[in-house]
Image (cartoon, rainbow, N blue to C red; front, top):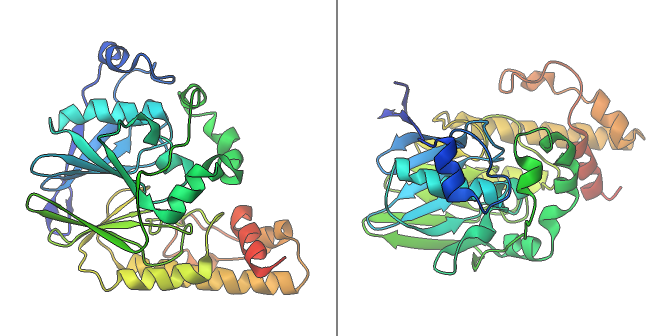
Length: 321
């Protein structure tokens, strides 16, 4: 059994046969899949990370916080089918009802399951997240840019049938605290970063931080980001009592130096993109030539020159190109 921040971790596979999936999810497009959609990793008592098994497209991780009387989920996945599968498979770890869902940001892979939740479930997000989902931005350029790649994942195309982007029913501007039995759950907005409305979920007693895509083990997507602000927003995380980070993609980690690593990467990429723009390079040319190999120790996926075109295009946009 792996250990993280001194706490034992256990993987729980959701037990879902083809028959049980069909019985519980038959009315949801994209739910015709075999096996479990999720595995649950217990990070600490009452706190789990739900990760996709690959049997059906789910898009992102979720965090599951089991309170005295209810459950709070962080992020609702890529489709109504994925969200419905999570609700069904939660029976592997709890019988308590879901009463809260938090959207860390507006991106389709984190918020397109919102529509399945009935009125008694409170869906919470930043004011910016509500605005973007209400205005159709979650099916805008980022969504469109991922469609070809996502179409290769099982059940994704079918899962988009009947999709209705649905905004949070409760919003915050800076912070919101829930007290659920003996657990304190803080929803915090420190500034723009991965998007204009990234919310992190902090459990101060458990010293756990759920970050969405604001902080990941690897280099995050930057196509809707604010790199300069992002560095400052990450700095705010350092003041929180945290021993374990539960990210929106990738496994939980306790190495908080990853905050510094991402800050350094963002600063350097901004400078090098600024230089490429000043030299008259197009975004495509800059994306091919910018070399971030000096960050390979922190991000081993970097093997030579070249950075995502979406990141450079976004930076040119912010620079007024």
